[in-house]
Length: 61
Image (tube, rainbow, N blue to C red; front, side, top):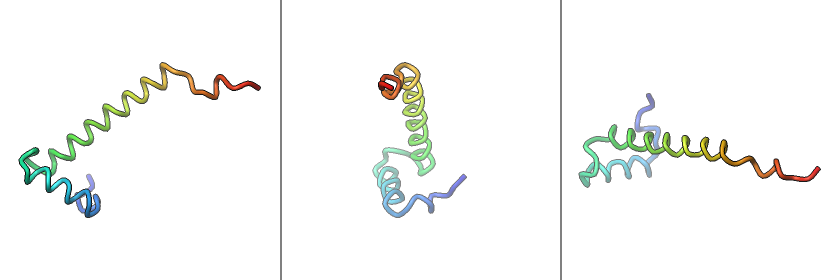
């Protein structure tokens, strides 16, 4: 797994802020939560794409 050094200064600082504020116990917890939320977002995107055809399907030819 990639180290936090690859996040860039801005994101590293943000992760540190969250941990230092007591919102999360560790940097790993912050990254896990971020990935969990991304997983939910991607799952919803797939569900929406399946439920609604692309606009191009309605284009006249």
